[in-house]
Image (cartoon, rainbow, N blue to C red; front, side, top):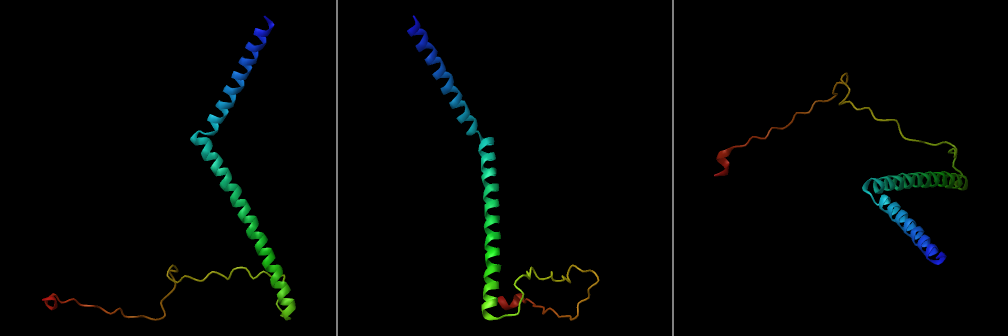
Length: 115
């Protein structure tokens, strides 16, 4: 009697365990879950790429300083040149006047030349 009860309980426990495991796996494979996992991986990859770019930039600045010292250049190694100032776009500036005027050549088309 106890043997049957033991095996019945063991079978029920194994069934509950297997059902729980399958349901968890099915929830992981839903489109929403897959999209969330992909977004998390993309964010993680973006952070890793940013860290890599910062490491490369730091190494580049360090190597430029070493080369500057070896070559005896007076440029300060600690200064970051950064980006140049943005160019002024005269096409978007309503107060800007064109300094030169160019005439656009006009091309005339004569239909009689085709025959």
